[in-house]
Image (cartoon, rainbow, N blue to C red; front, top):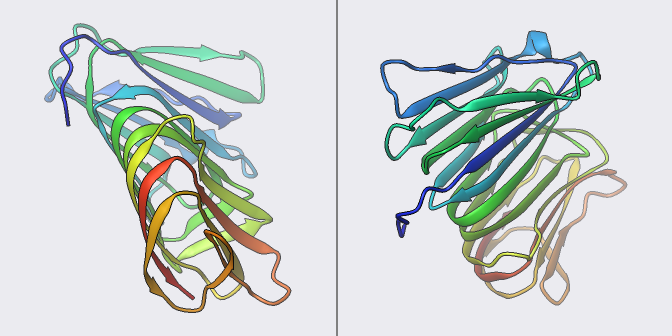
Length: 246
């Protein structure tokens, strides 16, 4: 990716219901910052919401781990050591929701996020010239979840049969305010989950097993009377390659 000379600030916002996590810096690698939220700091019925904002020229990977004791683990790698440690600000004191903001004063090279699978998750990603990969696998828990993507760059989304839907409809969407040049998407849903894929630009269906063309650019996978669903909307994407399985 193109590198910029100017310093770019990155804002990471983590919302954890009724819990507060404590960040630490790996002293042996001054270019790495690690942030962890244990399940002990998340209420039994709480949700995990993660906002990655104001990033530029970075790689971002999102995944899930069904064997971890952590609700979420975020690892940030800088291009070079920052001039100061990230600043952590906790807002909404006394509220059942804890809003944590982590601010950086150096460009970030890579952000890796691994969610646990005991709580449903929400995700927002915002930035410029990003390479974002999202893997929904290993029992990823979605319960009326919302993943909103608003960045320019490249996007890869993979959804496997190994996800859990706690109720309602979950949505993954690009907002269309920024322009994603290329996107690859592969969807293979569990037997009790219906699917909707909306493609609002140029695209090619590489493989299709069981999905139907509902209207121009919109494909559906129906599951009888099923009420659990995953909806994916890709707006302002230059070209999409899609693999669809039932």
